[in-house]
Length: 147
Image (cartoon, rainbow, N blue to C red; front, side):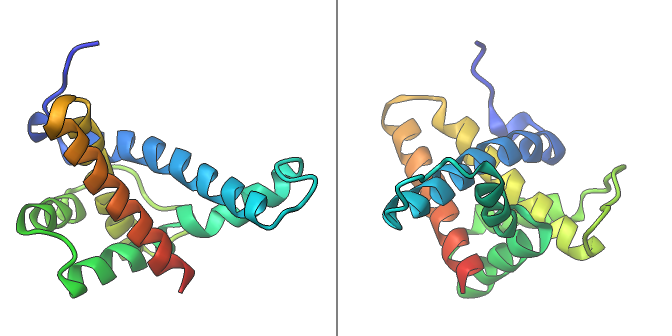
């Protein structure tokens, strides 16, 4: 597969890939919570897992997380600029079950995840550092959503 340069990709496409990557992390997180709960049937109740995952993937949860990261200075200048650019991008799609501003912030959060995911594909030390930063952001989002 061709190496993609995330700096050359529009924020909508970054959000597209970021949404998928974030979903995988959410599913692993929710499944891990089930395992830690020592439920002998962990993972067997897919509907219950899905219901628990919803809080992490809803626009309002993602918006809450990225706003907190911006306000706390958790994001660097380039990350904050990407979030602002993605948030302000004119989108053809309209939110179905979300506040319009929450939807914009959620899309911006997903674009940030997409940026770091594609940066991680470079491999080597830079790729490892990008993956580490992406995971820091994802785990911080989980923390903000859970509080």
